[in-house]
Amino acid sequence: MTRIKHPQFIRLILANLDWPINHVSSGEPKMAVLKVKFTKINRGKLAQVLWVLNWVSVMTGMTLFSLGLFLKVEIDKRWELMSDEVHSVPNMLIGVGLAACGINFLGGKICYDCVDIGKFLRWKLLMLPYIICTLFFTFFILVGALLCYTMRNALEEALYLGLRDAMRHYKDTDMPGRCYLKRTIDMLQIEFQCCGNGDFRDWFYIQWISSRYLNMTNTEVVDRMRSNVEGKYLMDGVPFSCCNTFSPRPCIQEHLTNNSAHYSYDYHTEELNLWQLGCRQALLDHYTQIMQSTGFIVILIWLFELSVLTGVRYLQTAMENVLRQGDPDSESDGWLLENSIAETARYNFNIIKNLGKCYQVDDDPNIDVPSSSQFGQDPVPTKGIPMAS
Image 1 (cartoon, rainbow, N blue to C red):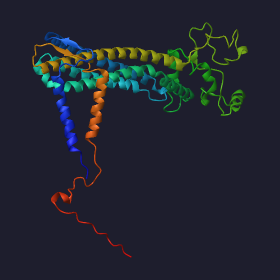
Image 2: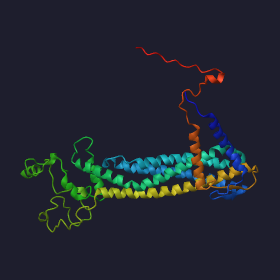
Image 3: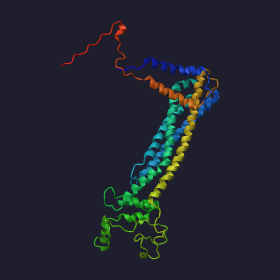
Image 4: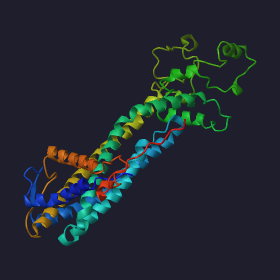
């Protein structure tokens, strides 16, 4: 049987209960961080301004939700060209946006009631937990903004593997589940003016023409397939969608590395015939631009939410000091931290350490069993138990 050390536990609870009384009786804290003095009129104006700003924050929450939804839709447009799910950032923005709407709606109600000292009493015990939760919420907004700038590497790898697999199935127009990939890649190369994964040479190493459209009675075709270890029909050619529409001459799609096969043509210097940019880089630039713009907007929202949180903290401390003074019309001080940062950290550490001491458990199973000496009786000696021979 276990037992909690009740005297020590009670002493610590009483000490914690007596702390606010001793603290108030000693006067205002001398080391408060960024202390500001508020009159009754200033407190009312601050509450009204924060009420408006919280409703603006509800709109910023809807903006976060819309940005996450837009990013999710943009990624889903080309999900077949990505190997992995890269929805962590949009899902986080959607969740944070919904949370912002709820938290700031509640904050607007609290700030509206803080105009009246009587209504503030209903929220007095809730304001500090609300501020702590909002602080964590604003931290997640900052994390979402930073993820927008660090998503590039994961996105690049997903695009590389996804485009590689999609190009391998370019020829499978008669296979269910893959028949759409040819049109998808062709539209991608035309829309983004790109060719291949890294560049147009990627098409040289895969068979992108289906065997249904190869004349197997042609000796050149058969020899080309036999010359490949895997029996694939490889050629120095590209699909039509790689052709550069700004080229002054008809597009050259086959025998690209054979200068003698075309008139006035040099494989090494020709740059207008095909799109030179790889589709991985084109898509990466497209998504990077979206992510950077989204990250910038999220950072602005984070700064705005942080300023609103700062105002709510000033309002909370100013209103609590009015209650301590007992005069609703008097001036009161508001601050961000009641003591210096070092003292606040030390105080919180001591609270955590003392709570750990309160719940120390004794392992003695007989700790609650009274001894016989307590009743004036002599202890009875125990006899040994004879062992069987």
